[in-house]
Image (tube, rainbow, N blue to C red; front, side, top):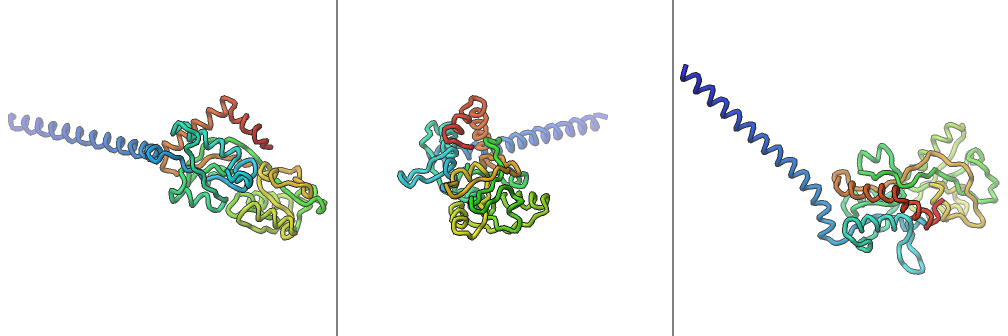
Length: 272
């Protein structure tokens, strides 16, 4: 009997040791995960600058002013507020020009910490990136020459639509064209200025992108049709595994929306 009691006692002791050991390992794993997240923010602080991908060809959102050489706009100012939260100074930010095609790859390879570049939030994109809550909602618009005499998408049946590469615009208009039983042709170009130039020269019949972006390209010879398609919600994107940065970004976006500062920025840049 004594021998059996000794065996039972030894067995209990071993089990307790294993449980303690497992508990320590689990705690260590959680600590490592938390440390990894904090390390991403610390890397930005150690560097002393937040690297942000923005558009440089979208008036009012992200645009390189030819007179000053500075990048300015709504999303530029928004990014400065995030730099202020992380680094205590809104000027500790470094901007890099991106397009719809390059913004994802630049984020993937770590050349930028985040992207604030009229980046539409989609379920598919959320599989690859963290997105902040939406800070602006818009719909796809159509910019045409007044001489075309078009008043709706229906009038563009058989026409060529200029869209940006890797944008969601083409899919949105294809879906709408199917509903209206019309056919559209598409020309995918690398930048918005290229699309506008194609419209001016007659190589495309329409420049399609979110309406608020088109406002920066409309002139006396063109008009934006009243139709809007497939509402687009803009969010700030960061790498999927950089959850601590995503949290900081979202806090700024939500605070600015709650305080009214976001509306003030929208008014400042005359976003329509």
